[in-house]
Length: 402
Ligand code: FAD
Image 1 (tube, rainbow, N blue to C red):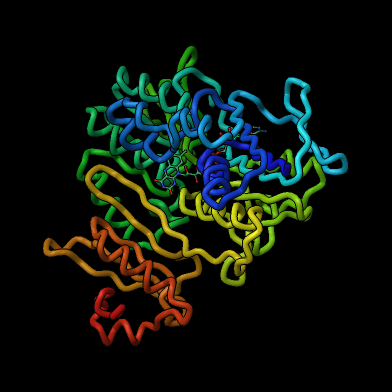
Image 2 (image 1 turned 90 degrees about the vertical axis):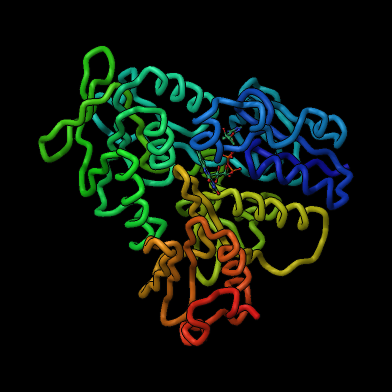
């Protein structure tokens, strides 16, 4: 029978296996991961797990799933090579596995900036459960933490650490927080929150070196100042894991390049999730989100199960929990040329609409789950929605829906 091999047992890879069975696929499924234990979710690592240390709720599926559904899951088994001509993958131990269809779900890894001292004990990265466990243990004994990078992961950690009584400084090179992913009013709201929670945010500040002899004692900034710290989290973004694909001769462009059905330059091979560069709305994007990994996985599973479907066009959405604030994003704000912010009763921004050429392209909400869901429905409408229409409804998303 047909054999589907999935490389990478994270959010996307696991979902391919689950969706294939839901879609009635009867062939063989092998899911190959390089981490120990059951496939797990990463979002809680910088949120709930960082706060309470409870790893028991992280698994995406219980062991019983693999037995019942007949999914051959192989943890701690890095794939070393893909041989497209022979149609097989080679595991690090030397074993080879033939495939009929191959799904690449290899995710991404943290960028290690070339900072002197980055190898010192006390310097942490956060991607996997092992990283999170080490960081959490270090946080328990830390007095001062420096976070290099004011993106989602750095800020989620900062909120947890500050709540645990650690003095936290966030060092961000841009002039606002989360600048790659959110609009300025949302950045400003989160800057207010973090400062109010006691976090020091240094904007427009570049880390130049990590100080210390036996372990990290602080971060030297490019402007000559020093941030003392006994714990340093480096959270400056990720790079897609494309090497296996590249070495096999598949096309790569930032991520593994795929078509509208998430097929690589070899039609037997798909790429999904953080490692994939895919066409969406007339351009090529690479998204780092649970939504993209899971929706890609469902699309690929339907293709493999033989179902006809239109090209992939799922609406991107995302969330980040920082202290009591739940940020939710519908759509992609990149390329916005105007924003419209709404305030709650206390005057704090709780919704930002982002426009390009007077069309709504994204909505950022803070503790406004109902509005987020309305935004998703509005943005998913094929015709989209104009700024004029929204203005006519006084920017009430639910009213504009009906
Ligand atoms: P992953 O889940 O990273 O899985 C890839 C797997 O492939 C990994 O286990 C990797 O080790 C393995 N692998 C790589 N190479 C090989 C090989 N050669 N052989 C075998 N296995 C290999 N997203 C959100 O939407 N909301 C959030 O709030 C959010 N919070 C996050 C917090 C943290 C701390 C992190 C790290 C991520 C967060 N994300 C969040 C992002 C989200 O977790 C990822 O987008 C998602 O996990 C991507 O799924 P994936 O399957 O593409 O990759």
